[in-house]
Image (cartoon, rainbow over the protein chains, first blue to last red):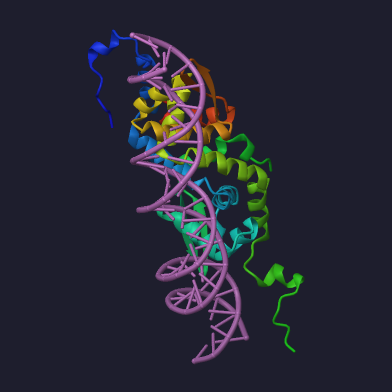
Length: 124
Length: 124
DNA sequence: CCAACACATGCACAGCTTTGCAGGCTTGTG
DNA sequence: CACAAGCCTGCAAAGCTGTGCATGTGTTGG
């Protein structure tokens, strides 16, 4: 990852590289694994349909698949696919009740994230 | 002829649809345009390289492209592509100084978002 | 003027996502 | 038992995305 091609003596020479900026930038990035994890988290919110499903689940507590499809206007099959993604990623969890499966939001970080976005917090 | 199809009045009691859940879900989703806008915003953070670049810019103020490439460990060309995306989306802005171009974060919502994620806020 | 530097762009390709359809499974109902 | 509701899965088409390579533009230094 780090192409250590710079010799120490280069500091004397007038290069455009701002070492302070680079160090600050590296500090800002932090742990690569954390970055990767959050990028994956963000990618789950990066689709309008998925974001709608998540907002709906977050607001309407445990809710059935059909109701989600109704509320979001998304094909029931597509909702199932979305829920599978969210399930395997540990974002939501399912509870079976007869032939109805209700989903709820279980990932605390995602919940916090959804709540921290003012424009997405609808008054009720 | 047995009316097997459901007339509007029948839906309330004969089907599993929970009207309250559906209404709450719809309320939670809110404005579709807002959802779409935020989905696009999230999609910009959905790639590790892009997220790294954004974190670096956010932390290291106006910073040159080469320094960004150094700090993130991403090919300079790829960094340019990323910066173009972030530029056209209004997330960052460029300032030319000689043959150096420095980028800074200008989208307030994205900045707030980055700061609202505890794990991404590195101590300094 | 020439060369090195800093950055941007075009293009092509591999990889992933999304979507719809078709069918399957389980659970209630008559 | 037969059937329908509710939900899940597999599969293939279509679209989108990230990446590397080569090249182009503009600037500085000699």
